[in-house]
Length: 462
Image (cartoon, rainbow, N blue to C red; front, side):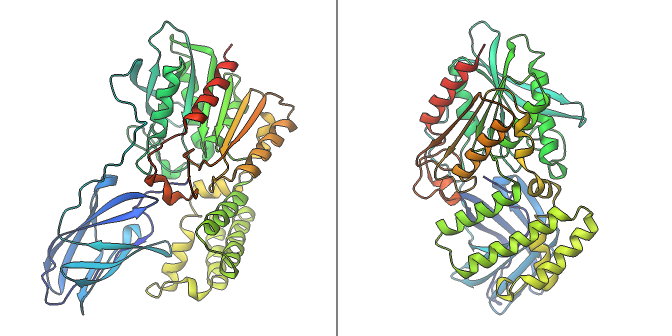
């Protein structure tokens, strides 16, 4: 479940009739993993000397500067160099039809004059206020990082102290509800657990929403200190039972929870929702293969793509000096990536950047090198690991087995694993398991999983 901001390596180009006045506002919408992301282009100036800015209202981005914009021969092209973005399309019937490119890939995008309304999806599981429990906005310190994190603490109205679960989100900058594809899974989970008598703390990732810090500079290990800070904070709350503080991590959160539990005796139990048990580089290859095959991609091109990615990961594992790493990856991409993989409108350097920028981030380098098997033997508290058998991002069988084996190696016998049929990475009933399906489904989180996880949690409470 690797959600990324829209505003990353992109290419924007659009097309318009030369005699047409293209100034004013143009509206379009991208469909990414079932989620609508609106794009608004503002054009000023005149023919031969246009300027423009770009908004992404669904992400709160406004006034992004367009570096260059040209309008010639019925075609509009523009780029945003500071985010590596661009679009190219053709004008007809007062609309631009073209493609939005990102990291070597592209998505169709049509611009028109009419504003596009925000799409409101049906989410029947989202709770409605007033809630039958207490809800409090909280802030707590990560002293090690020198930042304050913001979140929501929900507690039963009955007398405490209460057992509590800290929710830890998956990869990418997530808010306290782990909001993605129009869903708010952590809101649904927190509501369910609190109604069952278990308090819940969920918080915005560092640098996201109301939390301080720089998410882009953080690794999984850094994010683990945020979760540990949440545990420390809960120990100061009189309505919380310090003997029964647990962690529930989804996806990357399922990597973070064992790290915190291995280092702290304050963690009484952990739940891994689609957590990983195999090394990061192996997981990424497995994920890529599973998603590609589900999309109908197979044969020599898929095999070659996996070989290239494996080569990139090997270089990252073996090279710790950043300058040397950048140089090796550049040479590797130029030598190994077939010309057919490179969009015709990209220079060699632009293509290299599009292929390497993501893997050169601190988070990705750490993830590729990280092996959960090294930390799982250090976890001594009870563990529940669950997954869906149609999860294409964290394939269930390999990861559940690796988690079980890693914990057993350390002598932990308080372990339970469950594989649920027909559930995807978000624990939704699914036909394909593809990320593109997430936003099209009304279900946010399987009630069967909620029931079984809650039953297990209650068994752990002392």
